[in-house]
Image 1 (cartoon, rainbow, N blue to C red):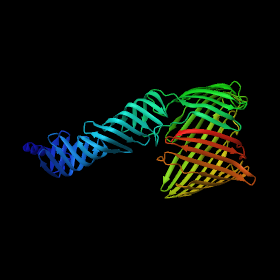
Image 2: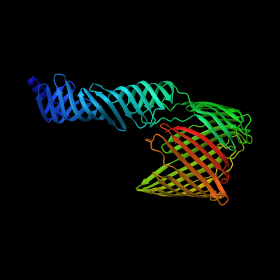
Image 3: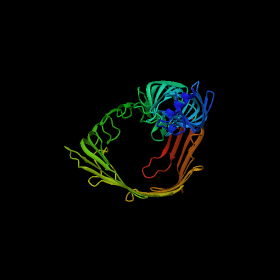
Image 4: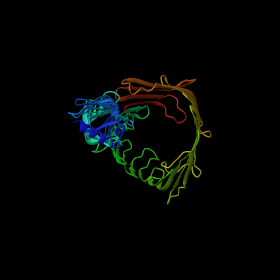
Length: 539
C-alpha cells in the first residue's frame, strides 16, 4: 500500500499542472491532489499548506484537505478555486460534494447548496443572480459554455415573483446569457403557456401594460388595448413582434373612433371606424393608406409610399417615392432625406457636427421643388465634475417655405443652448426662434441622491412664467415598496399658468403611474386644458 502511494506521488510530480508544483502529490479518481506537507494516519492522507485538488475544468485550494483512501473521498473547509470558468468559494468539501457554494463569472453570481465533483459538475438548490433576472433551480449541470437547469424559475422582480418565467428544463448559455426551454409566463396568480421561448439573463424584458386609459380636455377619453403581445414559439420574453391593438379614442366628443390593428415587426395593418374611417397597411419599406373622408385638406385620401433606408458609416440616406391625393394637392413625389454625423475628440473637448438636408421633386406636376437644409453643432467640455455644453440647431427652407404635401414639410427654426454643470448643480439656457416666435428658457437644477431633484425655471414667450418642479429620488431596487411623486407648476402675476403631478407606487415588481397635467395658459400654439393617463411598467 505504501509503495503504491509513493509511486502515485512520483508519477504526480510529472504532471504539468499547478498541483505539480507542490512537494507532495497524489493522483486520485477526482484529479490530482497535492500540498506542501503530507502526513499519513491509517487510511487518511492529510495534505496541508496550499493543499489543492485539480483536474481539467476544476481547481480547488484549502488550508487542509483530508483524503480517505479507502473511500476515495475528501474533507476540507474554506475551499476556494475555479470550476468550469467560474470563481468558486465553498464552506466545505465533504465526500465528493462541495457544500455552501458561491460562484461568480463576469456579472453573474450564483449559489448552490451542493455541488458534486462529477463531470460535468452537478449542483442542487441553485440560486443565480444576473443583471436582469433572479433565477432558482432545483438542480443543474455546468460546463464552461452552458448549463442545464431543472425545476427552473426566473423573475425580473427585485422582490417577490409576481412576474416569473417557469421551465421544467432550461438551457443557459454562459457566454450570451440566453435561456431556452418550454416555458410558461406567470403574471400574479395566472400562468400563461408560451411553448418554446427564450430569455436573456443580461437584458431586462420590456414588459408594459397594454391597457390604455387616458384623457384630455380636447380629445376626449382613450380606452382599450395598445400593442397587446401575441407570443410566437421561440421568441424572447418581452420582445414579441406580433402585437394587437383595439383602442377607442375621442370618447365623449364628436371624434369618437375605434382602431383595430395587428402588426408583426415591420409589417402590419390597421382599420379605423367612426370618425375619419380608413385603412392603412405597411410591409417593410412599403406603406399604403386610404381615408375616404379626410378630416382636413392636408390629410391624404389616398397615399402609397416607398421609403428604403441606407447607411454608409456616419451617412444615413432615406430616399422616398410617394403618391398622394389630398384636398389641395395631388401627384407623385420623388425625394431624398440625408443626414451625416461626425464626432471629434481632443482631451476634455468633444465636438459633434450633424448636417442634414431634404430635397423633394414633383414630376409631371406644376409644383416647385422643395428643399430644407439644416443641422446641429455641439461642443462639450468635461473635466472632473465640471461640464460645459454649447449647442446650436436650425433649419431653413431656401426654395419654397410651403411644399404641396405635409409629409416632407420641415419647418424653419433656430435653437441655441448653453449649459453648465458642476457636481449636483446645473444651469441651462435655451433660445428658440429669435426671428419669429421667440422663446427664452432659463432653468436651474439641483440633484441630491437623498433629497431628490429641484428645478426652478423662467420662461418668456407669448407670456412670462416661472416654473417650479421637484422629483423625489428614485427608490433603490432593494426597496420592495415605495411611493414616488414629481409635482410641477407654473405661475406669473395673473396666477397659475400650469399644474402637474406624476405619482408612482412601486411594489416588489411593478411601477404603477398616474399622470395629470393642466395647462391654463400656454406658450404660443401650446394646447390648453387637462390631460390624464395611467401606466404600468416593470421595475
